[in-house]
Image 1: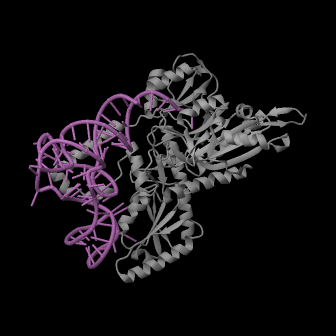
Image 2: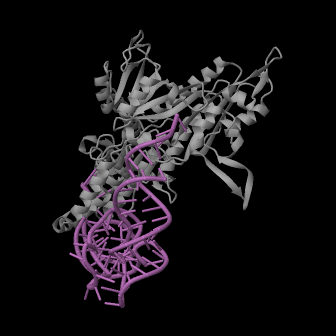
Image 3: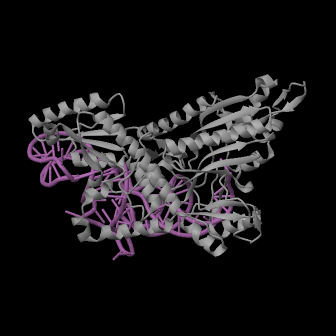
Length: 514
RNA sequence: CGGGAUGUAGCGCAGUUCGGUCAGCGCGCACGGUUCGGGUCCGUGAGGUCGGCGGUUCAAAUCCGCCCAUCCCGACCA
């Protein structure tokens, strides 16, 4: 995964805190403010985006900070979301011929050191176990930051012949990278992910696999997560440590910064040579395998939060939402209660098979309170059922993607299931449309360096680049933005490098990134 | 590792300048009532070795020293 200098608006944050102190100490503001609202309020995105992000995650109960620095606890609601992400990906992996397996958490230190670029890239962020059972270990064990090495080691034993190829294995696991600056879901010291590892007889097959899995990621992101992504190749300086070529899907977050949301690597024969992964071909000649690896992590959850969320909280795409529909009954008298709950039973019967439905019949909270709560938690569709609805044999549907009255409509109880699935489809499509429009509205095509510098403060810059590292470095140094990827979709022809004016054969996407 | 800041109830904070009813407020939580179509309102109550250790003092949340933790900036980052 690619990371780059994350300039967050910390100064603002500090300022805010100070401001808040001052307000609190002023006696009149202390008494009359509506403190109840304050307690559950989310910082508006426009005021402080990163604070909004953590507010939403904590208040929606996706995750919480762990007692260990840089680590987080994924709470049941957040884990349910992750499980849906897993399911969507896993289904696609199986459909493309992959099997799941599990490799160990501990990796002998010497393994990591076998591939030169791999060591170089990973050593600064390794967690190393030196003692076990009260004794110093002969050889330190690395807590896996990724598993190319152990898996390569095993592949070298499993693969003898071209008949054994291809090997198509995926594993769902946790990995550890000793990060200095962490953010919930986006970069934590331990995170959950999936890592696919494949071995092939030829470069072409490996390349095909690498691109196939990138397509799988893009398909998932677009169709399940409703996140538009740009597929492309990583620049030399941004590629995976040990890869021949890296590819990624890049998405634009709500603050217009980029987030790499999945990567796929053609590892060439680098790991095959380091781990001796060889096979006999049809001519009885010994050949090195060609391997690939590809991964998507819990970072995807962060992307979902940042792409769709608004100032009321989370907005979850229906395909992935742990709760797709929440029903809130409303009543005053016991009599009404009976009638309303009876209607709720009908709703349940109509929807239970087709959607993930939750009935919130808690009596200790008012309907208004529940509305806010479930909006904060991002439930795509709400059903309100009160006495008036019972009389008219209808319910009120409220769409999360259109807050307030605008998103409400009355539908008859008869045929509710159809109306609900239609609404969910509508919401799913609308989220993707909205995110795509937002991204496109903030994507620029600067042709000179001055406008380029402005563009990367506003969103994505799609610009000609000569491919020189010096130009890339200058951009990074002067604009804090990085090469996100060289998109597959190219205008064709040649242009002038936006930095040096030299001949450029490709355009690249530049942006400030997480 | 360098620079900055913070640590007082589950959460957010006041109190620290000028040591002495300084153990306080709001939210949350528990109980009772009242409300319920967009975060009802009222009452009662539980809850804290003031980050830790040491020092100064008749007296320390408050002053001094050391330590620890967290956050931010920088460095670093497939």
